[in-house]
Image (cartoon, rainbow, N blue to C red; front, side, top):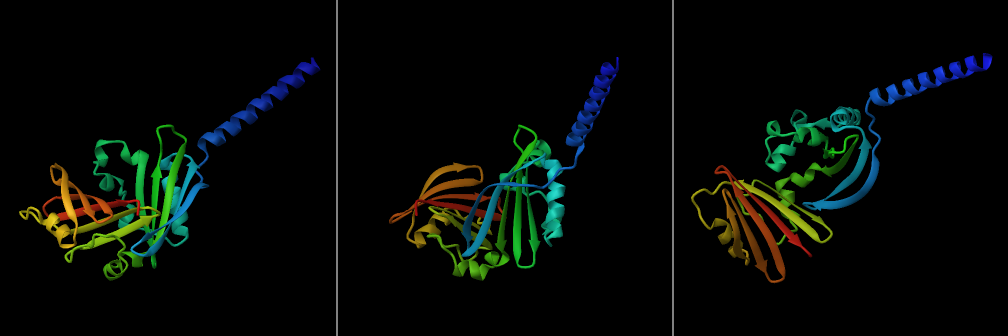
Length: 239
């Protein structure tokens, strides 16, 4: 009888302990403890950009405020009130999908630098992948951007924002300028003025895709327009 009482008491405490541990695991707050997957450096307009890719236990919606608080304790402040930039970057409507619960991009700033935080939660719940990139704000100075431009096609004189980024044999450049509505062939003429041959590959509503060639340089260009603004996305492989 005493032996039975011992085992019943022991079982009771085991069950209590398991219950407490399970409750703690389920309801414990998210922790920002990233496991680094990779690190690399790129150059944007001549300035070095340091990037880390990592994974973290927890769901995106729980981790975002925790990471934001950790960044703020280091002096970083979210730009534009911490607005999620992912829908704008992907051309998606946030209210029409579950995009914000799976992917978010937020930019932080402190004196002299910008930090970009990207979070992606795959369909398999319980973990979130992220990347953080830090770059001096001098990279976005128009004068410095032109002086350090390292891409074969130069931005036009009326370009408002532009940057070029290189990673080993891959280069990409982005340019925005005032819209040129009613001026057909303007992009082709700008390319020709710099010695490039531009061949229209595909044309969609408000978007044109070109292949550009000049000597050994081969570029892919996507030109998008909305009437008020024009954007160029330029890519060069195998430098």
